[in-house]
Length: 549
Image 1 (cartoon, rainbow, N blue to C red):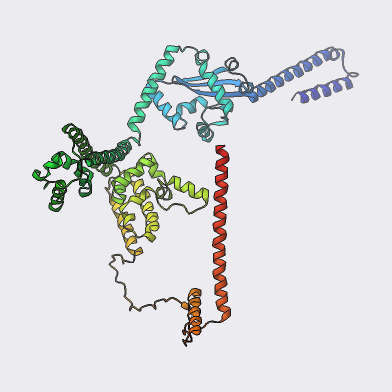
Image 2 (tube, rainbow, N blue to C red):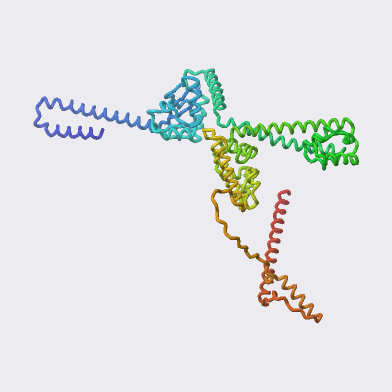
């Protein structure tokens, strides 16, 4: 634009010079005024262009910084140098451009939930509306949401440098936000944190799984404790009555018998009909009469019976906890319980972390859930990966034959994935219909794989049974039998006895030599493999010895 006006002034001056001869004295007097006006016009145009260029450079070098606080959204403005400045220099290089305060505690909670879930709320969109350029955010996921928002146009920056800038801003927040005191910020931070905690506990989709996870963990701990207590009780009481552990094998019944009998000398006058069968009771009383155990004092028996009391109490509580777990699983995950059982379903939920996490997992992950260590070891050593994890303990896999376990595990994992997603995400309460239907299909597949025809309403035509020929062992290819027969013939020839060679022993000398050579090759390969293993073991031992040194 300035160049156009300069060209216009130059052309005007040439025109004036060309017409100066024919101009009147009044026109000649006005010529310097015209030149001065044109010069002023050029100067003003240059200044305007300079201001536009400065504004453009300022906008190009400027950067906007979004900061979320418990009081509201703050938008700061600075230049690019702030990204490379030290934390002490950053506050002086920033200027507060806009501040959007939260109206109430409920509004602050709603905005905080939006920030946590990386969503752009209406209040945040109104704050950023009309702004362009580069925007620095602390959360990269929130930056992606801002970038995808149709009403906003920003170039997002979110890296380690922006984290340093946000850290410096939060340390000097009271100096950068006028009108806020330290007590106000503390109060708002505390109130927002309490409200957010209550909101997440109240509306969390994972909170219903906590009872199942804690119950199955406690059930496993109880099993370990009961086993330890029973082992200690049998070993302790075994000094007095060692034959009893062989007769009464159940730990809970063993504890009750110890409590009821006391000393073994009182066994003949104790009634065990409510605990043992008639045969076991008779055997126990007979063993008590001829027991090889040592005598114990009354104080010893008191402590042994106290341990037995603790064992029976833990066993009784375990039964109650198991019933509670079954009820919770039926209420929360009915389809999963109907398909794989209460205990296996609870262990799958506990291992995944929550019902929602288990629902997000594919069937292949559910199949090997619990066998991660074996999976990574197989991948590292390039061996076959495991076929099942925790799901192996389901009753359907236990009923399958060895060759069918892998197929049944894959099918059961598929049905389990569908059942878990229905339990976690379905709004309608249809009970355990999906789980029962999946179990029916798995059972039908199990009968088909194990050679049993599944139940079907369609009549299948039965073909006549034709027995297959049974394969027999071919002795003609057995080198050892050939050598044995040759030895028999040689011995008979030395003794002068005529023996007819077997009809099956009709092979050429070349075939026999070939079979013997194949046998020698196999033995040679085995010998080489054995030597390689020994050498490898020696190298490992040498490395271990060097590490110890």
